[in-house]
Amino acid sequence: MGRILDTITAAQCDFIRAQPVFFVATAPRADDGHINVSPKGLDTLRIIDAHTAVYLDLTGSGNETAAHLAENGRITLMFCAFAGKPGIVRLYGMGRVVRPGDDDWGRLTALFDPLPGVRQIIRVDVRHTQTSCGFGVPEMTLAGHRGELEAWARRKGPRGVLDYQRQRNAVSIDGLPAPGFDGEAEA
Image (cartoon, rainbow, N blue to C red):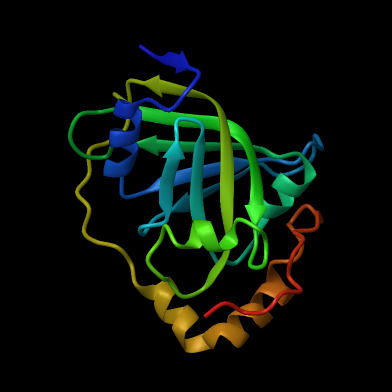
């Protein structure tokens, strides 16, 4: 049923692009730490090449991914089909956070249409991929993307979003630091 590959294939890339939602999983090294799984949507993911994926990480209630990546770098992205032919693709790799002011920031943000509330970009150096059947995933119809996150960020404005990030996104629920919240707000 499943296959493990060394690269993101063209077929996997097509499958990934067709999915309106994906999931990000990270965990601290500590045995008692929280394994975090976050759903992501909107037009926030790009496959750069056969070994690299990036996504815009929008401001949220926590910042577990950044804290876990700062500690150990491990990350998995999962894509599953909720419509059409069933399937699952996982990208396993090492991730790092790219923040405003970092060398790659301008080049990577240029890949995306502007969205309010961008916190950082997560870059994943893909070590291997896995495909599986997805037969147990329910088939569902997409009603549309939610607009609440973008509206919230627009109401707050760049300074308000940055203040929120500094207050609520600097430390994970495990107490790990999520570095980088001393920069200037992005428009």
